[in-house]
Image (cartoon, rainbow, N blue to C red; front, side, top):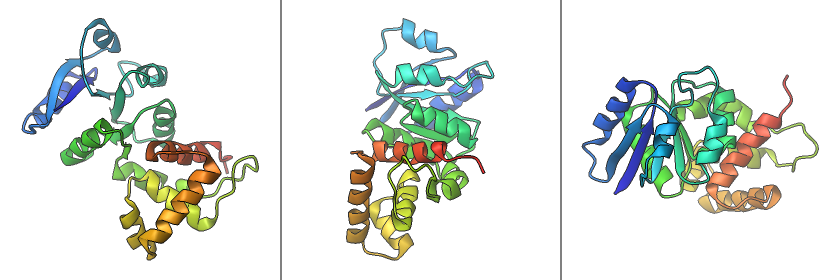
Amino acid sequence: MIRVAVIDDHELIRHGLEYLLRPFDDLDVVFQGSRIADLRSGDLDHDVLILDLYLATDRPCVAEIRELSAITRVLVVSASGRPADVLAAIRSGANGYVTKDAPAELVVDALRTVAVGGFYLSAGLADILQNELGAPPSDAAQPRLSGREEEVLAYIAQGFTHAQIARRMEITKATVDTYVERIRAKLQVGNKAQLTRAALDRLERRPEA
């Protein structure tokens, strides 16, 4: 059973998420509230926190994500699909980011992925960031990746498996595995979540055109 807490300042969204997850035997909403303080004040046990990025303010709660991600897995579900917001949330420690206009099944997939230690970025956001993620940074201080390595890294950031990447790039899975090992060595990262954050970090450091 994946225990889910929901923090969103819109009651309709909170109840909508609870209604969405109710049919799934492996998902249980154990708490919902409009403020992070409500969650902190309770003695609640949950596996994943669904968090809105903007809570009754025009400031994204990235500092709160940084604090919360140290004690729980955080899935941001936000109306904002702006690349700057996605980058800020992920770099602050969010384990996934889904926009509120995403299909319901993607929210379920995201919860299951995040709950077992994975990273999830909805396809719509991947499309928005595709060009930037695939572009090599001009910052000479960063490790230099080949064009194909950058392409593999961009697909990883979108949540594709090695087999899916192989089909899209028309190469073998073994070749993709080799590219991934090279990327990890160059960027000095381990798991998929770290690798995805490294991709977003390279995008953020890229100078504006």
